[in-house]
Image (cartoon, rainbow, N blue to C red):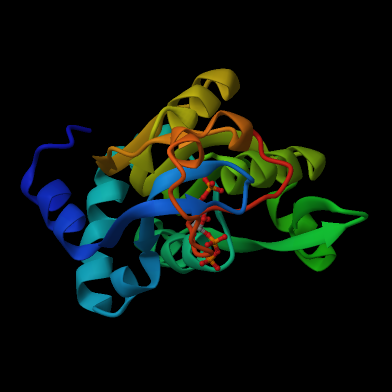
Length: 205
Ligand SMILES: O=P(O)(O)OC[C@H]1O[C@H](OP(=O)(O)OP(=O)(O)O)[C@H](O)[C@@H]1O
């Protein structure tokens, strides 16, 4: 989907973006922080965005929709309703210092052997999406596509290519992101702020 359409512009305007020096939960440093929670306040608008994603994602032949808590699952649930498909969520856990996204055991049978559309609100380092795909695969689901409102950087496209599935998104945002040891903002002596977008301490990117 193109990113210069009206919805893309609306999304970029709606997201609360702050420039600065941040440490994402993936461990990377970056120059953009997003308050994604603000995107969900207007439920009618969110339903309209979900419908725009559905128009592109319907052809991937999904049988179930999955999203990582919290933002991804909120959007995934709306998309599942639009597509008249089942919905499951994946929950972030830290086990032995490693991050995992877990689908509740009781819901494993919902995804087993079925084509799954993975939905997130934003994909940055790709940790949440990458780890949720791993969990879907563990439950014998078949990745069918990835859908999100926003992508930042190249991780979303790379993960979609690696899994051979289409990526559907409504907007892209530019940002710098670096391994902590290579961060030019650290090198410039810019103080690090403690808020940031991203999950999955071990990172998938
Ligand atoms: O591609 P990534 O680097 O993983 O970043 C994107 C993820 O970060 C945000 O979730 P967050 O961990 O902030 O949790 P939340 O949805 O509960 O706010 C967002 O909802 C995505 O799931």
